[in-house]
Length: 634
Image 1 (cartoon, rainbow, N blue to C red):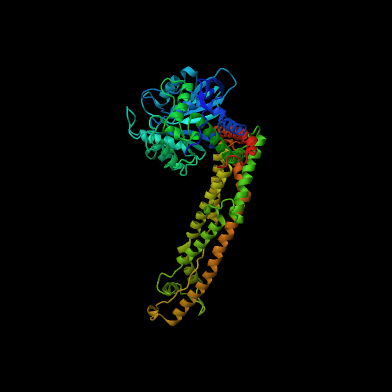
Image 2: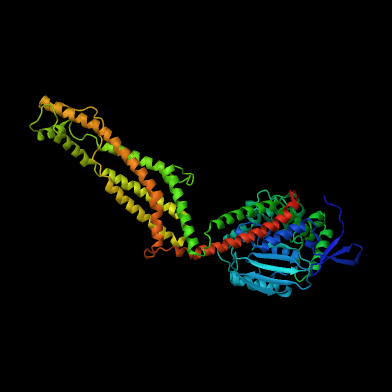
């Protein structure tokens, strides 16, 4: 059930040195490095250094997550004490003291004999030292979360640069509690659980779940939360604290693994009261070596040094596994940023450069209009059917033709209009010839019924083209907000002139008739056969004539629109915009292009900084990713 004990006592001095104690001669103590530092090897150290450099570059602000050890646990589970034991950093202790903000501990090994310790929060930097770390953290927490019992998700970063500590980052989160106590907010559980999920949700997070030996693991809220994001437990390591307070059944708990902890368990005894770190490690070794129940637990899952070793190994493997994806995300983000930066307008230094930029805007917009309005090429707008212009114009023309057909349906009794007009147009003339005046009168009736239709259609067409024109102008002048309104105004003026010319030209005189279907003729019996024959002949002739005229009206409009659209794009579009831009009285002026808008200038600076950061990050990752391919497979 248990392995053979090696009886090697590992102790940590206040400066985080470990003392190796031989079981029969404890006087021959030889100080070595701290627990976590002693676990380093030539393969893991460069990985940790790489991630630390990426953190220093603030690559996470670009949405690129880095492997991070996140310490979670129910309230009073002993989270902060575990961190103290690992790093030799005195955190706030005492009755009622608890973590109320995310405490990001960034430990950096230094060759300097003098430690450097400082806090960062709310854009402030506060220098402190080992003796005053706890008070400094409490003061900073009060500033961030208030002096009461409330919590805040604004992080507090503790930087520690000293000999004997590793380059590693751990985040200690507030303990999870369901019931508000001692003046805590009513929604304290929702606040803390939201904070915990935010930190453990990224797949790059290593969850260090701190469990008290005094409770049933299956009832721990921290277990429930971690299993939501890490169902298999492959990214979760459990630390069991207070082993000395509940030794009975602990072996069964950690071997049965009822809560699926994929990375295993480590049982520890944290520092109690005013114990030094050296004394705490001595008492921990004695506890797990001599206790009748705890001594049955394998020595490879007990003790702070074992925990330090596991964390280092796990983080090293996680970093190695994540590096290729981190590299991919950095490259992808940089490509997007460079592309966006290249789309920004060049900073122009002369009117000549501004004029060239203007002509480039006009030329690009003109080419786009030719493609979508004339050539029927909508590859520029594959998903916007409103910009598939030739198809939409054809639909509108077909609708106009159908509307003309419907307008010409017979509304009165068969032949009665023709009979009435023939009777009123009687004159002395040759027999069997229909009077010209009657023919013109019938035509006049049809014209009166449809004279507004072509004009309405032309207006509808140009209203649609105006929307398309405005959309294209907006797209290609978007990088020049200082002149965009002038270019749009030129487009509106152009469309107004085009509509006016088109409406004045379109004066239709004819409209088609369609088939008659079954008609009643009983009302025609009292009319003379000669008159009926004339009326019927005139109706047939006009019907045939209007069938031809209808096609000519539609064809004529189609040809007119094709000509007008080509002329609009090829000639009038550029002339109108240039005229507008050189007319300073109208609010134009090419010189305004020399003035970069504040929004564009801000975007340019932001993108430059982003690209610089990503390039440096890419170089950092590229320097190591190839050296560690294959390392970290679980």
